[in-house]
Image (cartoon, rainbow, N blue to C red; front, top):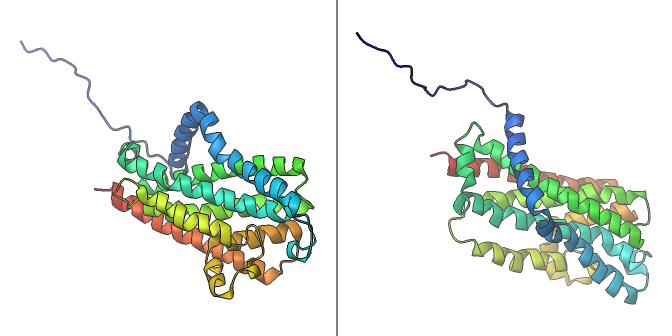
Length: 274
């Protein structure tokens, strides 16, 4: 007589995760991590622009009188929009560099995610949205503190936050694409901050008008995304920016964002699909 024993067998559920559901699952995982470490990361992602504003806008700004170079506005109001833009770009570049490389190389959680129904393109989108959410948090905190310090002069300041977030996301996407192809230990990102981000912050019209620079070096500022973000943010907060220049600056940032998204999704796909 033959006895048949029932054994548990693994079977596919047949459930297909919808694209935005897949993105949300990754975001949920990031939020779970952030809830346990938010105090450590808030200092770098939220308070950094505020401390910069206090040092430059309030401290240094107390020695600068309103005049033609500041458009007649107090120096605090003159630099408040651009410090937010430069601060969020600095945060975006930092979040898009080593943390993304870590997902491939040290933590290697990207490989686990790519083994699930979440595609590399959806993973890239989720990471970009997470960085954007961090930028929004920093922008809201900065807006509130700057308002308490009297750094805003009109309702146009409400447009500064989305402009700064757009500039940050536009800079983050090419860095994410670059991180997805990096094989080394990430020292290149320290060089990127030292030789690109920091000079860009100093010479892209953040602290003084661009026409104070020698004519020979002004084109270097024109090609930087920070200058386009600064012009938009300062124009929104203080006025004086024409429609066509504003549309031109906006087109540059959106174009950089779109190019970065297309390249980043392709680089994630190439590295994670074997």
